[in-house]
Image (cartoon, rainbow, N blue to C red; front, top):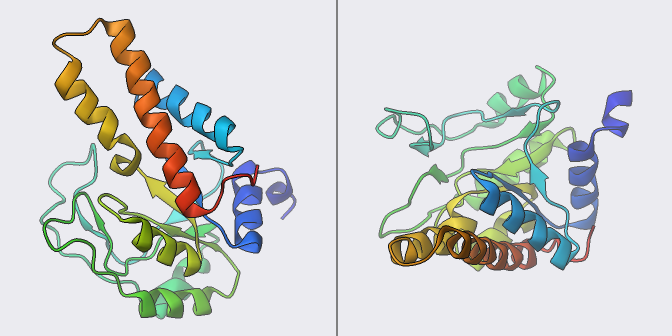
Length: 208
């Protein structure tokens, strides 16, 4: 596959797999998000992924919960990924696989995440390096949970609220009283700070 030698996302995740660390894949909703993410990557000398075409990612099974921008999905029952599904999806030619092993889209509630790490290990064994592992549903995750998933082979760590929480709280508190320029600059800093923390947790700091 000659194109894989030129695709940055593929090469970034290949290096992460070989190096045993994870790389953040973030969603940028506005200019504050873009600037905060990029400044964090520069400050930490860390690779960072902002999704943009080319490579194909699949989510076998169904990760429970609702996703931003998609209505009426939160009540659908989750279905955990099986080794058989992994083989079926790999056969379609996907590049990255995001298994369901107890992770959910959206918030986890009082109980927090209850992940089946043994299922993740079996999935990793099944893919045998043919595709890269991705983890979805990282809202409310602790440093320990994130690190366990990276150690378990997840080289692409999709994040949303995990790096935006302080920014969102900043908007709620300060939007009525601060100018838009100050609000944006301070908000950018909030995103940068949390993103730098997440890069440290994933082990990607200094890997760019």
